[in-house]
Length: 214
Image (tube, rainbow, N blue to C red; front, side):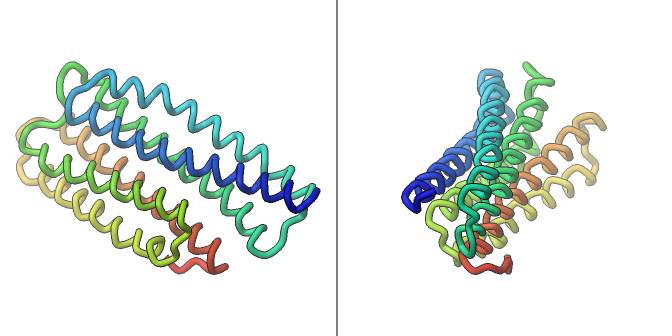
């Protein structure tokens, strides 16, 4: 395989990851719209889009063996190939977690899942998760090591919002056990979503430096 051909394959690989990162960000935004605005159409769009993310991950997985066998990359090229597989997995899981949020919204529709007292903290949680997703997509595009390492700090906003939500649920929550379970699960989904975005940052740090320090 010529170097030009190899570079084309790497460009294709990074292009698919860039698409996945944007789609994973759109998924959590759509799921949050479904949840906070009781929007059935937004939830159904998220569910339909999950198949696209799954297909893109499969595309990445199909490209990896061919690149490894035909070119036997070393050093930074090998790191890119290894990281691509890990990043695709993290982005696909982000899509799955957005689907979990959308399914909770659909299960309760046309009744809203989030009672008014929880709306501010749930909105903060959704917005913080979306910001972490945006940062991970940017880091993936720029491979900026410092921005990648800062993702851990951005994730702290999600963790803090989740803690505020849990505190609200254990302090005499008046909407019943079922509502409390729904909100606790939603908080966990958002927290895990952000964790996967941070994992994307970890892989970028490894790609650039050869070590993971995030």
